[in-house]
Length: 330
Ligand code: ATP
Ligand code: MG
Image 1 (cartoon, protein in one colour):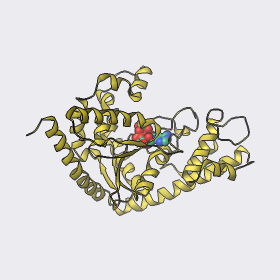
Image 2 (cartoon, rainbow, N blue to C red; image 1 turned 135 degrees about the vertical axis):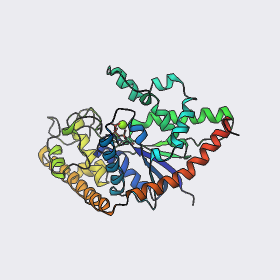
Image 3 (cartoon, rainbow, N blue to C red; image 1 turned 30 degrees about the vertical axis):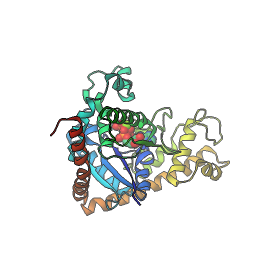
Image 4 (cartoon, rainbow, N blue to C red; image 1 turned 60 degrees about the horizontal axis):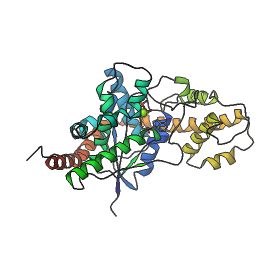
């Protein structure tokens, strides 16, 4: 049976968070058996906001090792560094030429920053959704597992693919579909549950990093913002803090929120937090122990260069087909 192809990535724009794990990494691992999984480290996307080279390098290495520590297996999944496959940037340029300014103006990442009054924004941030479209379309990926924050970009990718297919009257690109999980598509900040947990936001207390000392992560859960209802219910509107903790526990235990509700029935908030904290502590301890093993094995360069080789063999064919279709090569 031919497996369907799936592609996704994470930016090494900081230390990976529990949100990245639940919303992205853990799903990559889950899907690697049933899909042809292509996952990369989105380093070109990372530089759309200013980065310190040493810090970026170290985040990049950490992210790549975390891919493996989370359970991605290079024998099953193609794992590589985005900049190692030059076709991404080249198709990115081509797609920009088919994208309207109005479409990019509507993209939330850029719009939010403008609304916040941020100035000196780079053009790369503005055009990054087109690079992301290239990341996906280069591989004829059918599915893109993402958190809810990325859905809009997959929709733009679909629009571009359809536009170009129609313009040249052929099935040049596969139209990808976003794949959203039922739970965990958005993990919230523990101190401000109206905000997404994000690696590039400075909210140390509200954000759990996968490489946090597990004891420290435990404390962060224990001091998570809750409410005064004193009852454990899944109600993201009224009880966003408690609901967030329920989703974290359910996702990490790979069970439904209802199952967690049953297990924690009647608990006081303090005991409920202890329950969630233990699950988080255990998850981090496991990941970090594998992280240390993988780091000691010194296999990263080999994994990434083999991954790039495999990725390039698909990407270069697609780019050639695109270039010849649009008439820029003989
Ligand atoms: P940044 O703040 O730099 O944008 P990020 O934490 O949002 O970082 P990304 O690299 O933008 O991470 O996203 C990588 C993947 O992780 C995407 O699939 C995204 O949907 C998912 N993701 C990010 N944050 C969360 C979250 N809080 N909950 C669930 N999924 C998330
Ligand atoms: Mg993001």
